[in-house]
Every structure is written in C-alpha cells, then in structure tokens.
Image (cartoon, rainbow, N blue to C red):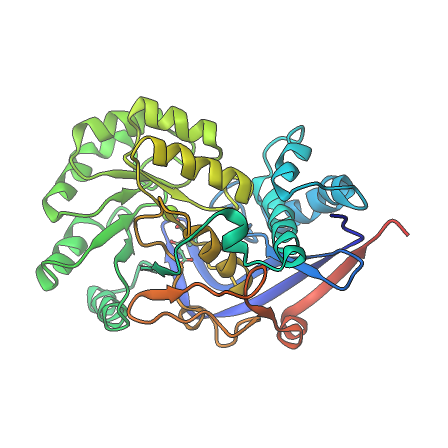
Length: 370
Ligand code: OSB
Ligand code: MG
C-alpha cells in the first residue's frame, strides 16, 4: 500500500459533562484527527489521544503535531508499505512519542482494512462479535452525585463501574458505594496519586472486594507496584506504567500487577497493543481496553482491538452519548445492556461524518510530496 496524502486536523469537542481525574479536569477535548489517503479514493482514520497538557504522559497535541509533521509523516508518505504491522518498525529509531506514532499507525491499519474490504477487527485477527464494556466515572463534588452517576451507569447496563480516586476521595467514598451496592463489579483508578508511604490506606481497600485498583503509584513505576502488590489482595492493574510489550514483560516478571489496561495510544499503536495482548494471553493475565475520552474514531479502534480473545474484562469504551452531544462518526457508538455489537463494515466500520468534523476543526494541514 502507498500513502499519497496525509491530512492533520485539530479538533475541539465539548464533553457533555466535566470529567475529573486525580491529575485534572476535562471540560472539552482537543485532539488531532489523522486522515491518510491512498490515491484511489480511500481514507484511513485515527486520532491521537494526547491531551492539550502533559498530565497523563509527557505528550501534548502540539508535540504530537510536530512529531507527525517533522518525522513520522515523511517516513510513510509515498513509501511502499507491505503491511501495517511494519509501520512500528519504520518508527523504531524514533524514541517514545507513542501517541503520535499510534495516531498515524492506526490510520494506516484502517486504510489497509478498507483496501482489503474487511473490518479492522478481522484485520487484527479478532473474532468476538459483541464486546462487554464498562463505564469510567470521574471524581465528583459529593458522594450523592457519585451514587447518581453509578445508578445511571447501572441502568444503562454497563458491565462494571470504574470510579476515579485520589487522596481525600478514596476509602470513605468507596465504603459508601459498597454499602449502597454490595454486589456490583467496581474498580478504582488512582492515576498515580499515591506513593508507597500510603500503603496502610491502600491495604484498607482490600475489604471492598474491588475487581482491581488501577495505577495506584507513580506513572513510570514498576518496582514499588511490585512491593505493593505483595502486600495487598486487590489485584493491581497497570495503565500509565506500561508503554510497550517489554514494559509489560518486566512488570509481570516483577509481580507489579495482575491485570493490564491496554491503551493503543499509550503503547505506540495497534501492533504493539496486539503484542501485549499476546504476551498476557500466554501468561494467563487478563487485559482490557482503556479509554482516553476518544471521539468515535478512536472509540472504533478500541472496539476493533477488544475483539481479540484475551480482552476478558470489560473496557472503558462507553457509548458516544456518554461523552458527546454529537460524535464525528455515523452511526455513533451505542451500548445495549453493556454490550457493543462490533461493526462489520470495512475498516473502522463507522463512516466519518465530514460535516461534523468540519464543525469541530479549528485548523488543518495537508501533507504531500507534490
Ligand atoms: O486513566 O483511564 C484513565 C480519562 C482520561 C485520562 C486517563 C484515563 C481516563 C479514563 C476515562 O478513565 C476513560 C474513558 O471513558 O474514555
Ligand atoms: Mg487509568
């Protein structure tokens, strides 16, 4: 396959409700949408999950744009690409910048699947036709507001409830949730808000029968997480600490976690995400697909990845309407009783709505060699 043109767009979409994590609050979502064209009328799509500020990792929209423009686009434009799995090797001499790499790699995967006229899930080797999903609920101002959000999530049938925690919004809040809902599957995501010195507090979480605690300690740590995991019963799930299949192997060998959250952007693309899925499968470690408040385009990529068979735990891929008044794909992602039916159309399986894209685009740029 050959990419003859790349188009980057900067979009900004308002969230239906603010979303608060231990590192900050989102009221809208700025992101880069990548379109790669093959010269025969087909376009492949993906989005960068970098945020506007380096809160979650070191990348930002601007660093991603620079990386794409100066390094990554020139490496793929007009090059003969035999298979999308080769793209991560073409980028391997460029360090980190995983979200930037993933954004263009994902668009190339979509284009490949469209050229073959198969769904992206099939191109990845995924076989599930329906996937179970959960919902992630941000830190709220009050416990009643949290309970109301949980109530709504359960009513929509989501298969598990993830609640964000941080110091001051943890043990007492989870106790109230557990008292109100003794049996529902719940998990907590700390986004790196604790340190080993908080071990006594983290041990108290064991009484609540959580499915897991996600990323309690520093964002790049796997050593202290191993110490913590040896001291608590609640399974640790790593998010921020795992950037590659090598990181995943080391974390599993150290005993730093029992579950891995796979985010395509965080690990540098679908190819690396599949490698982590494979490693975890060999070692009987369950994985699930994390979310980054994606638009429908990123959501479609998450759905395709989740069709691989070791995605045995519900992910964060909630319905479009949980985030957006209007999404940029047609149809939007819908969830029935906590289940998404995997689309069967070619590529990401949803049509990109150009009118909606234009409405949310503040600037864009075309890249060709002509
Ligand atoms: O840690 O999983 C995370 C949102 C923004 C940044 C990091 C995270 C999250 C979420 C929301 O938990 C996931 C989603 O609903 O897309
Ligand atoms: Mg997380």
